[in-house]
Length: 376
Ligand SMILES: Cc1cc2nc3c(=O)[nH]c(=O)nc-3n(C[C@H](O)[C@H](O)[C@H](O)COP(=O)(O)O)c2cc1C
Image (cartoon, rainbow, N blue to C red; front, top):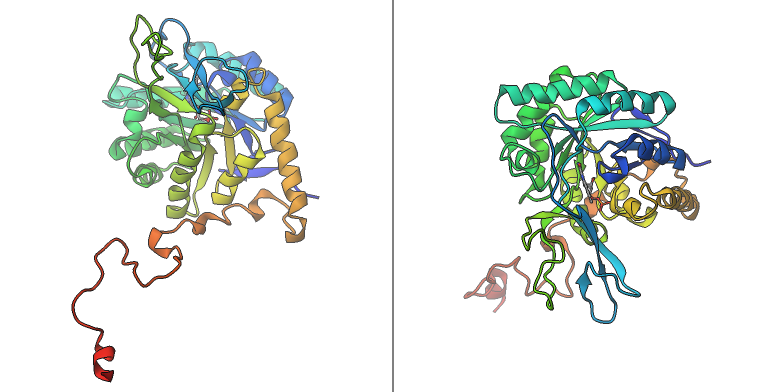
C-alpha cells in the first residue's frame, strides 16, 4: 500500500499538500474548511505587526488566454483558459492579536493537521528584528507547528521588507538567525523568485539556520493595457503599481528556480509553489527534490479553499503510485529528487554532431591538428 504521508522538517504531514499563504488562508473559517476538505497543511496569510491598508477596489484578478487569438486578458471570454493570477494585495490586514486566539482554536480543532504561521516584519534595525521574534514567539506559543518567514512579497514600498529582504543575502541571514534564536519549531524561509541567482539567497538563509526554503512567491508584473480604453485592466484612478503574477504561467519559471536550489543543496528541505492545480504539476516539484507542495491560485478559483483541487492532488498521487507500481515506490521519499540531476549545462546536451559546437566560443582556427600533420 502506498503512503501519502511525509515528514518534512521534522513535521509529520498526512499528505504533502498545503494551501500557501494567501486569501485561502486569511481566516479561521477558511482554514477550518480547508482542513475538512483534506489539505495536509496550511500556511496562514502573512501576519505582521504594522498596520495594513490595501488599495481601493480589486486586490486580485485572473488573466485568461483565448486559443483563437492568444490574447491574454482579465476580461471574461467564452472558451478562454486560465493563464495566471495577478495581485497587489498586501499581507493580512488583521492584527497579531486577532490571529492568536484563532491559531489556538484551529490547532485544537485539527491537532493532526499542520499549521504554519507566515510572518513578516522589517529588517532595518534591532527593533525590527525584535518584531520578527515577537511574531515568532506569539505564533509558536499559540499552536503553530512551524514558521514561514516572508522574504518574498513583491509589492512592499519599504526597502527593508518582503522581497527586498529576499534580494539581500545579508538580510536573509540576519533575519533567519534572529528568528532561529527564539524558535522552538521549524523555520522555513519563502524567497522571492525575482533575483538573478536564487541559490545565493537560499544559501544565505541556510547559513542563518533555515530548516527549509520555499519558492515561488508571485513574479513582479503589471496588468496589460486595454487597447480600446487605453487603461490598465486593473487600476485605481488610472494608476497601477507592480504586483505579482501567479498560476499556470509561472510553473516553468518556478521549476527552474527550484531546480537550481535543489541541485545546489541536495540535502536541504524545499517546499515548491507556483502553478499547481493537480498532481501533474506537483509531480515536477517532487521529482526535482521538493518534500511538500503549496497551492494558491487554483484554490482561489475553487470555492476559495480548493476542495476539488486537494481531491485531484490526492487522487493524482494515488494514481501516480499505481502507474509506477513496477518501481516498488511506497512513499514520496522513494521518488523525490530523482530528476534533480537531469538539469545540466547546454554544453552537456547531445547535438546531431559535436564537430562544429564550441560552447559558444570560436572554433580553433589556423593549423591542422598535430596528428593530422604527422601523417601527411
Ligand atoms: C491575492 C494573493 C495574495 C497573496 N498573499 C500572500 C501573502 O500574504 N504571503 C505570501 O507569502 N504569499 C502570498 N501570495 C503568494 C502565494 O502564496 C503563492 O506563493 C503564489 O500565488 C504562487 O502560487 P500559485 O501559482 O499557486 O498562485 C499571495 C498570492 C495571491 C494571488
